[in-house]
Structures are given as structure tokens and as C-alpha cells.
Length: 286
Image 1 (cartoon, rainbow, N blue to C red):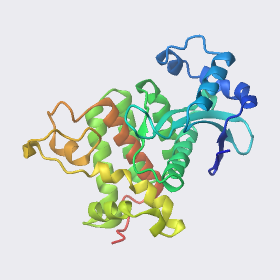
Image 2: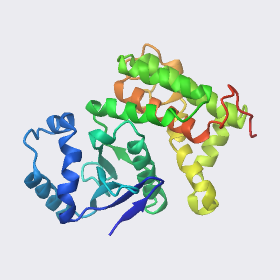
Image 3: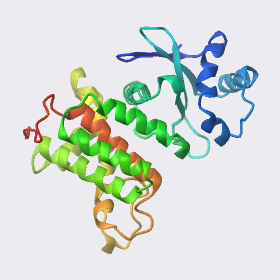
């Protein structure tokens, strides 16, 4: 049975007797149920879904529990290989409404991402991100930033505010600048190259204590993809700092999903790497 732990959470593969405790995570997220066309979701519905998971090779349904209280706070569902594209998918990650805004969703995602990379050696992961879940994601971002006194945290909150106002371009651009400033501040003028080189290291080649840092840098490989308007090719179909900076006016650069991904990455790096003090500048490490 698959079991994972993080600072505050215990994630484990759901068994039939767990389902009544997990059902409220679904019921307190009515937007997700509406989007999934499941207006009358109940325990029998969850049982059918659980049975479908067990009939699908490589698919896992995990209950997410708070370690201190032992209370179920959410559910995650992932698939080792989607038959549509042959890639692994994290199809569901929901947190009970009462427990949202505490950073638990972000903590669960980080632990899952670590498991996918270290235990399963996945180089790519597709995410099923619902636009209707945007507010919950932003609440988790704000909750994580609340404990960070650094100036980067304030700028990240400005980016989340812009997203809530549906200002996708300003939110994405601001998040891109935060990411770039953070990397250059920490690693010096060659920070983009150094961060990407660190991210490309296989975890078997780095000490265990550096594994978490390596994982948090991996999204930068895509974020620092080069693209120029004069290149004659379409911009990347994912968030990329270069396209964000140089592709203003291009219809494919600024989208709700890429803006959300940019903000999530800016928040993740800020929480992971900001100095403990509230100084506005961090010392470069190389």
C-alpha cells in the first residue's frame, strides 16, 4: 500500500472503509462536482469511483490526512500512464473546504511531486488543473506566503491579487519577474543557467539533503525556455519567462492556465528560498 508523509500530512492509498471519511472532501467542493457533472454525488458514487480506480492498472486514489488530528482533509488521484498521451497524470487534488487556506494543498502537491520524481523517476507530469479551483489554489498560495516576511512574498501576493481580478497578463508578467529576480539574486548573473544545470541533475547524483532543492528547481527548465518573436515558431505551450517578456501581443502567450502556473511557481520558489529576514535583497551564492 502506498503511503507518504510530509510535515503535517499523511497520504495513503484509500481502502473501502476510508470512503465515508473522504466523501466530505468532495461534497465541500461543489464547483468541482458541477464541473464533473456530478450534482448528486454521494457515498455510492464514491464507491463506484473507488472500484473504477482498482480496475485501472497504475491508477491510485489517496486519502490525505492531517497527522496531528488524524482527520481526513483531502483526496488525490493519479495515473501512471494516461492512454491518451502515454504520460503520467495527477488528475485530482482537492482539500476539504474547512481546511483550505492553510497551505495543505500546496504541501500535499509538493510531497506527491517528490514521490513522482524520486520513487517513480518521472521526468514529466501532466496536471488536471480546473479553472474553477483557481481560488482554492490562490488561497493556499496566500496561506504559504503569510509566514514569509521577505519582500518577494509581498510581490507574490500582488500577483495573486491580479489573478483574482482576471488580469492574466499582469499576473503572469509580475510572476515571471519575481522568478527571474529571485534566481538572479540567489545565484548571481549566471543564475538562469546555473538553476537549469542544477535542475537537470539526476537525484541519484545529489546528496539526499539537496533532493528537495533539486525538485523545486525542475520547473525552471520549462520556465526558462528561450523563444523570440522573430524565430518563426510558435511560442511554448506552457509558461516561459522569455515568451512572457518578448511575446506581448501574441495571442498564445498570456492565458489563464499559464498565468496560474507562473504564479504558483513564483510562490513555490519564494517559500522555498526566501531568506528568513525581511531584507529586500538576498546575497548571491555564486
